[in-house]
Length: 163
Image (cartoon, rainbow, N blue to C red; front, top):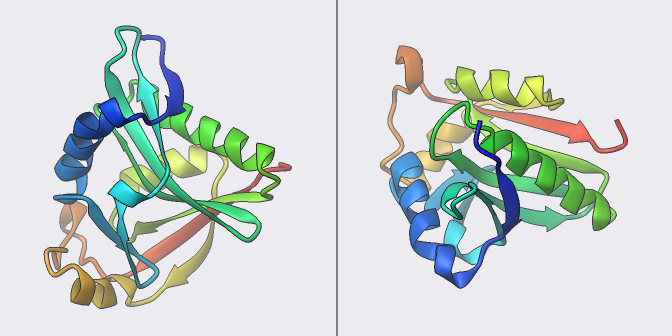
C-alpha cells in the first residue's frame, strides 16, 4: 500500500479536488439535511500519495460541538485515503475542542455504511424523505440509487471523539 499523508488543501489542489467531486457527485454541489453545499467554499483536507498526487478529499464544516464531514471521496477504494482522511478530520475536530465527528449518507450507500461503521461511526438517525426533498435543490439526484435501491432517506452517523 502506498503511504498516504493528509494535509489542508492548497490552491494548487483545486483541479484535482474538483475532478474527484465531479466524478462522485456530478459537480461541486451536495445536498444534506436540506442544505445545498458548494464544496468549493468549505475547508478541505486532501490525501496525497508518495508522489504528491491527490488521491482523496474530505470537505467539512464545524458548528457547535461537532465537525460535519460534508463530502469524502477517494480516487480508488481500498487504498487507505478514506481512512486517513477520517482520522485526520477526527484529529482536527479534537484539536478544535469538538466532541464529535458526524456525517450524512443516503439509504442506498451500503458500501459507505460498512466503511463508516468499521471506523467507529454509529447510526444515530434517519431523516425520512430527506433525499426526496433534496431533489428540489439538486434535481440531478436519481430516484434509484446503488444496488437498485430506491433513494429516499438520509442516514446520520456520528462518532464521539472521546471514544
